[in-house]
Every structure is written in C-alpha cells, then in structure tokens.
Length: 134
Image 1 (cartoon, one colour):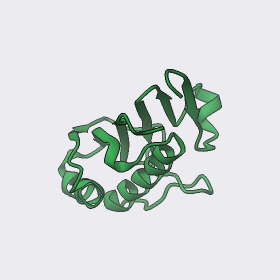
Image 2 (cartoon, rainbow, N blue to C red):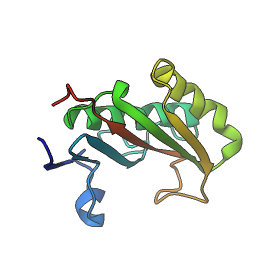
Image 3 (tube, rainbow, N blue to C red):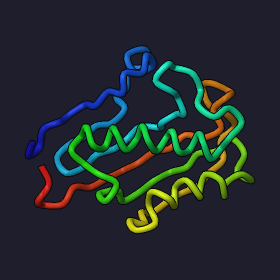
Image 4 (cartoon, rainbow, N blue to C red):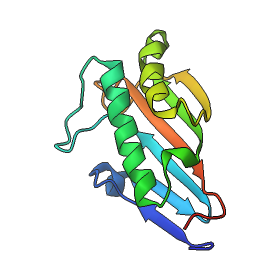
C-alpha cells in the first residue's frame, strides 16, 4: 500500500451511524479515532475505574493499529481525554505500561463528557510507519 487508503473497523455500531472508521491508514500514516472503553458486548468496561477503562481503550487502539499494519512501536503521538483530569495518574499508569519504551508525544486533557456518561476516558493514537513497513 504505497499511497492507498485503508479503513479499519472495530465492529462498533457507532462507526456506520456516525460515519467514521476506528483507524485509517494512508501511506505511512495510521490514525486511530477517539477510542472508548467498550467491551465486545458493547457495555462499558470498568465502570468508575479510569485505569481499567484506559487499558481497554489501549487494547482496542492496539488491535486497530495491528489491523492497519502498524504496532505500538510506530506510535508518535497519543491523546488521553478524561472527564476528570485530576485522575490523570491512573490513565498515565496504563499509558506508561504500553509506551514506556516508545515514549510518543502525549497530551492529557479534560473534556466535559463523552457520548456515554459512563466513559471516563477516550484515547487517540497516531502512528507513522518506517520505510521497511508494509
């Protein structure tokens, strides 16, 4: 895929409803949309637990990266969006477990809320593939 576009779905019912893809790869760039802490059953994972929700968001984002031919090592930027920024350390702990060796640029910010008020965090991920990749 030299300059083609690849859309990656996570199977979320919100994707066709809103008109978005979980991730998009265009050439060497892979971007993962704001990823919510949804379980395979569609229910919120880890209600009330920022750490558990961040882990779930990162699991979904990592799977989307793989489906697009990328990996955590290709990640250059992440965003942690929290409804309560005072809980940033719990989100950062989950982030650090995945990215301690990669150390992408990271922004932590507070938002007023998400589509589902049970979601405490969403994660966005951007990756750039090196010349040897796909």
